[in-house]
Length: 258
Length: 258
Image (cartoon, rainbow over all chains, first blue to last red; front, side):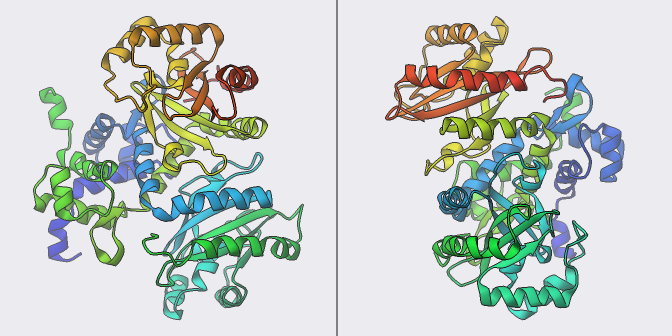
């Protein structure tokens, strides 16, 4: 950090956000000692951060006043964020249609460098709850969505994402070999969609196609995911790729999308 | 604020959150001058806050580097929050079932004193996007969900919520007369569900029933909403109230829900 940026960076704001972030890796409720330990700050700093965040509504006291849990106020910021991205509003009816027509799970993920982040989902049946929650991040290189996005990036950006990714594979089938990932990206560039088989969850196949902005930059991807108990990979792709690509094509190329 | 709490309250953390919150009332992107004005801080403070929030990922530069927009990192906190509330995980399959069985929109809202806040939704067709987004807040006293929740509260809490609510009615049909609201709450206590007709949106009817924790405190409500073009209020209630109450009953009374 340069001297200039150092004076601009507000440590206590960063520490406060770190207190919110420490709930990502640890199930709530957390005590002040837990917060101090996970955030690597002293107990007095943790107390001031927690007091301020409770006052603002971003933390709440746990059941029976024990410890701290995340606060409902976080959902207000979610609302503001979701409302501020024009792509999400435009994509919603298309995703509802694709889900209805396919009968399978459909999601939109936003491209964020090394990860993609779920922003819209249309769940089916009684699937595992957390795997499809808004805000879940997965490694770009390990997902159909990410690789469909990478197929629209210049070679040096693809190289950079491959070089900097340190994410742990989610299953024994997650492809980690860079040569193999490059082949999959090249195939996606030709086919217009990417496939990931059992890379995020065993038994699951995902098909994804990228959404481009008006400068042909990939900004998001839509995926359709189904069960290998119901489909072979080939049959799944043959059945749903046209529907999927028609949805991403309808969303792409508009000004002011992201 | 007491002298004690004053030393615990971290002004720069609160100011940073205020910068995020100012996007609630103003469409992004916002310039530094906009942020300074809306947050009532000087331009230098706005610059330091924005710089720090961009570094952390909670703000991003707008298209072509102009101004600031909310950052994708907000969705990570959404993920953590949604995952931290056991009720939401348990309610998800029930809400999917009720939506499928009813064919109408189904939502779960959390009770937060003067407001209820949408936490789960199961959208149908091409409805207005923002009206059903996660994180939307509506006045407790103006909604079926809120009044079904109030029907499980002691009289002095109901009085408090009525006295402190200053929310603007959303439509010309929103009931604002306190005597009338009290009657609706009393009726909900008998029926087990509350009705709101065109109070949030003209042409829309909502039916709601509360979810109680293991101490019989209301913590949330599920609503089913449909169009008065398709249903009379009576027919809607007769058709969907049993399904709705069976869902909220299945969720109520469990330990560790909220």
